[in-house]
Length: 271
Image (cartoon, rainbow, N blue to C red; front, side, top):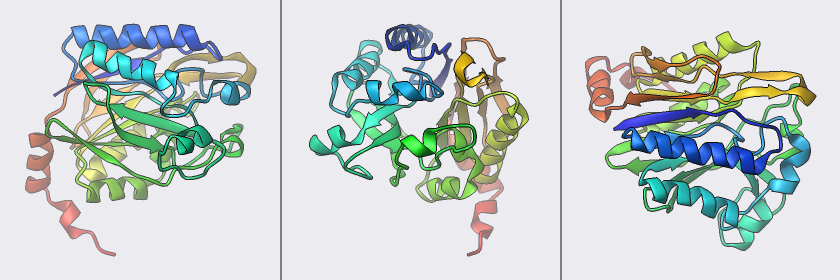
């Protein structure tokens, strides 16, 4: 299974420009043989563009998500559409199971090659330090996994990396790859590297941390990039710097099973 992470330049509030970059990155990754492409957190308008959240929020059956589904179908790939701002009222009206019938969520959607929505993950842990996320959004409650052509995939988002119990729950669901769309800023780059590696080591699975790139002048913040794929031993399979780029890595569910069989630490867990 070929996995591609798209480390996109994200312009605050510039929906069309950001969507164009995302579509181009997905197409390029597919042309290089990717089976799954992962986009960063809030790649549509930028994590720190808080004033734009209500303006660009969309329900899961609205045109924004149709455009994202088309990125998957046009390129015949599985697509983790980073995260976007979801309008929970609109999704509820369309019949989706949502954590609240009003407000907004930080939502990642896994689209299959045919554009169908296979999994919807709403960020559980909302960031409150120098950020309005926890004031503006509703935390998620569901923790889905997706069986994609024999690979069990789980999704978390950015700040979730600091809460290892969430990842244990994914392990209990049989997860072999966890993708982590993020908007992780400087100066906490060492946290970014360490936490992603730790989640791979302690859960004996692949962890793919997909960050954005760019500066948000209003927030005086720059994303640190450095998207990385870690294997079940915590070894870095592929990593990049802080500029816009893509990286690819081969993800093999058989390796996860072999590592867990040869080093069965998960069997020694105690309540």
